Length: 78
Image (cartoon, rainbow, N blue to C red):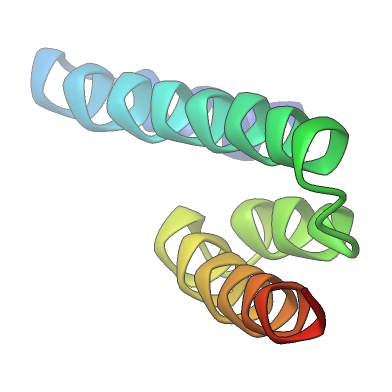
């Protein structure tokens, strides 16, 4: 596992892309945590796992779908 992780940092171009992916995942994690506390959006942890395995873009897209459905049902209830 460590060997696969370190393979993303073999040259300057790979370092740029790998750092970008890690920073994007960190921002997604902070956003999901914030909205779980403020708006009570549930199941964000699933999106964080999807951000690790298939990729951050998959986790982000699924989070937007979950978030939209939960916030729409919250708005309708008011």
